[in-house]
Length: 80
Ligand SMILES: N[C@@H](CCC(=O)N[C@@H](CS)C(=O)NCC(=O)O)C(=O)O
Image 1: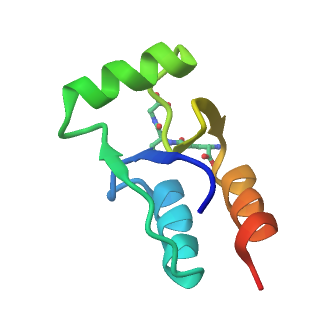
Image 2: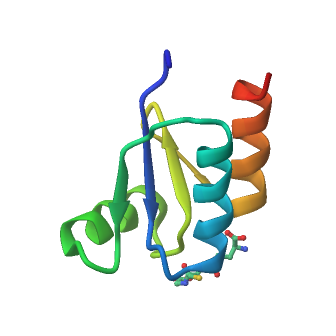
């Protein structure tokens, strides 16, 4: 992967599950941060987006919100 990614998420969130499933399907390993368990991660997310909404995929420092948009981005970049 040429880009740097971080996925802010928590696994109990159904929208996060959609993204996590897609990562699995595409066999992509992306660092994740759990905003429910990790208060520092939650603060980072607020700094990046002004809110606590997950999932949020940070791509080279730029946040992408909305599970559908994240899944579409991943498919466009990495689906064969
Ligand atoms: N439309 C959004 C919905 C995401 C959403 O509602 N996430 C919830 C957790 S399941 C959340 O982040 N709630 C806390 C907040 O909005 O600050 C998506 O599809 O990603």
